[in-house]
Image (cartoon, rainbow, N blue to C red; front, side, top):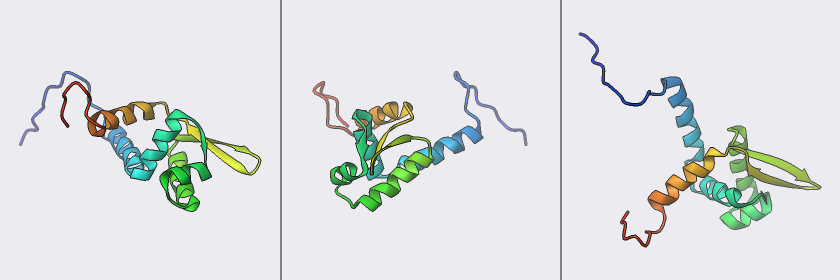
Length: 113
């Protein structure tokens, strides 16, 4: 049986690239991690402040931050005993923009979700 081909106007990404992208998206696919990214897109923040904003214990935020940092999404810097986190991956802004456009409050243009 011959394999059918489908014509595409844009080049398709390889399965290796799509697998890496899916793994990164799985890392982001948690409400607290998305909130952390949203906060850090605005300004750097410490673990304690992120824990307060997320309303979860610091150790849970630290685990989320570790996952995000291991994936290359975040940078950190130490200032005395405090560690501050910031966005390392600029593409996170585009991803959050897509999420906000799709799931955010309806715009005044009358567009419905």
